[in-house]
Image (cartoon, rainbow, N blue to C red; front, side):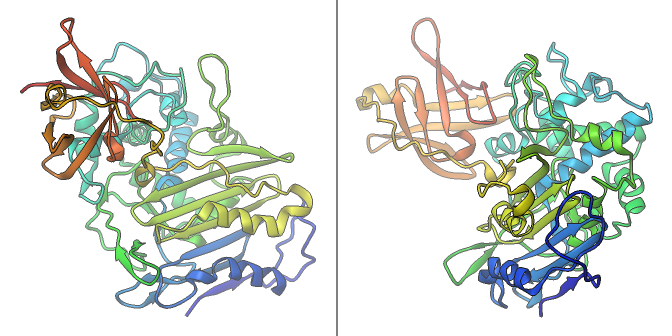
Length: 482
């Protein structure tokens, strides 16, 4: 049931250096080791993944493991379509690079030149800030979750635009620091639309995918659209059973690309064999970002950039619902590794690096640790806060925290109530969550999107609200209204 592709060209295998230009087949000893990495998912009762190894101008090894659809017993193959989550970001960024080349925009333009609806926050936010994750704009998934939108709900571009249009503050001054924000790439997609009159899907289809022959690739901007050969995403309920992990996105830019291993191999090759754009365009795409103080980050325009033992590595991973994906490219070796999975418990980054270690270890052995990942919507997990001690107060003291709190930027309410000597955070769409006082003005709970509340008081020490302060959200204010 598994589909395997191998190059038909038999050439010496182990000299993986940049000046070798021949397509090479993998020996059985290597393919067996690769198959062993994915043995756990190599059956008819499990979700799994598709993998690809690219060298020079060929997809030299591609294979599917496990099932694309458990209900109908459809296996994964290299042609199976996956939602690749944040691996999508580099295509949004490359669309911007191509438009800059055409003179239609400049990466250092103020985004409000193209997005008139975006609020005037009295500070310049550039397109480059969006693509380098240095804009200070709060992350859209955290904002959605706080507002009461579950990540399995239908989420549209228009919904997010309205939400971002109500933002009143930034997390930090643009360029001051790096903080991963999916919002920047949705805004970049809207800039493409503003400049070209085309949606991101339309522009990338004509400017990137069709020229590269990526005929089974598109930005999926309508969750209702039927896509033949697509995979469905799952999560484990126990060691033998799975449940559906729902994804209903009609929003693109930060995520949303549908593609397969065969198509993505052509994009990997474009990093060193320039068919769309030229060398300067790829150099701009992969140029590391800089903060205002001149410090470089390890993130360029929609893709991570690392160096290991003299070899450059371009990489990005993605995570939405049960989809877990990664692309790792060694441009100087003209090699790439892809893992697209439909099971939330898989770690494709580590698997891609294990494959890479089988092939490049004699010349550019990369670390066994995963390349630092950029996790999107489903990666916003609560850190271990077991070390915090509870700040004990009497019921009378706890009662002062209770009430209804309203956020004008998200038009949503949360409640704090006292029950059996414990404070509970309440919301109509979520289960009640116990709040733990770790200080007089610090409240923690188990909900990743609103895990840290900083209490606000007036000059008489009366509680007047709280701020949400998380990894990707800072100073989001809720006012106490009751």
